[in-house]
View (cartoon, rainbow, N blue to C red):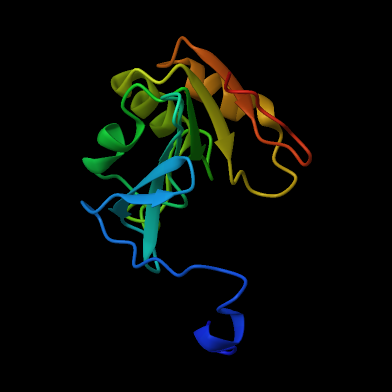
Amino acid sequence: MALDKPRMLAAALTIHDLRPGRPCELGPFRLDVFDLPHHVPNAGLRLTSAAGRVLAYTGDTGPSTELVSLAKDADLLLAEATYPERVPEEDAPYLSSARDAGRTAASAGAARLLLTHLWPDTPAEPALAAAAASYPGALSVATAGLTVDLT
């Protein structure tokens, strides 16, 4: 929007001022926003359908007490898992591991966990094993073209 100015796209979209604690209605969905820590501003998103299905997405984030609220009873938690086991100290405030994502999903009661943002060319198995150490539910890694049915 900084390059095109909102008026240039006014007919194609509706701009919403997203703020934590202020839900937004998007068609048949409710969108809740969570301010989460990262190197740059990051919003975790919780999208709830009219039927009550919930997709929670962390974006890139470090540890936060907001993560369990974001993912509470979600049908699907899409969670950043840059590292399988442990985030290096210099990135620990800003990124998560698959092990962290598993703990969050378990604490929140998420029905399914989909790990994303693994380093390129990183095999999925170590991340899956790390998340499964604390999360007993359905677990997978996001791949290109993946479709998930929440019905």
